[in-house]
Length: 145
Length: 145
DNA sequence: AAAAAGACTATAGAAGTAGTAGACTTTATT
DNA sequence: AATAAAGTCTACTACTTCTATAGTCTTTTT
Image (tube, rainbow over the protein chains, first blue to last red):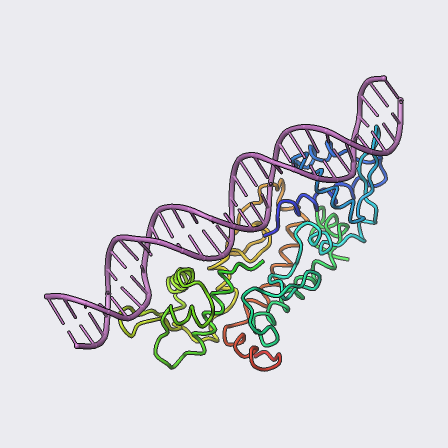
């Protein structure tokens, strides 16, 4: 299950994507608009900022805006920042590889092989869907690209 | 992340699959062989039994065995018993549908549409991979079917 | 100097996961 | 019939992770 943190992150990025061109958006406004607990959102935005996805400005008239094009921010990368690995088992993770506790011989593990397939299938979607795609899908029916 | 419960379940099914033809296997032996805490395994096997995947026999000489062909037990079904929904958001779940807390309008939700794609991609693997496939993959390289 | 914003760290509460305990039921053996 | 060998079922505890909140500090504008 996707954490709330991740959902909030995506929502925030979508909102900031729609806000592009306008002055930066303050945390408080964003929190209200998207119905996200303010202090929680604060942390999330910080993470996204430290990962290079957001630009922030302090002081009066400050706030947050995207630091990349909505079309260059992929869900896979967001998930990895907020939730960590995308794979369902650590031993099948590309970016967060770790040996499974229960595993004796990883090389011949049938479970692992299957979940590498799952990971690939998942990534095929998440690494190709950007914030721009999510925004596009919000309004119209279903198209992609 | 897959729960330990699910991993244990798959391991147990694989072990029982390999044991087919022989007398039923006792929980204690299975637990030792697969290095699973006995009482925890007990619960898991019960769930699988109540879902119709295992046959059990009480008393001396009793134990557990598969109630279906290994080729007819699919990982997707196992996951659903042990971990619940396969989709990453409840609103994208086929078998455990539930409205997301944070969601205003599900119909136009771009997040939902994307995660329905993810679910479909995941299921394409998990609903077609059986315990027999996992066993096959353990020994040899990588083939399927 | 004051106010408006974000940055950062710590902590508390809630929920979910992993594991343990124990009493009960069924079946086989003697 | 008695005993022992299994599985059945429910409750509970400990631990970890997730969600959320609080508070103090820093930067920037007016």
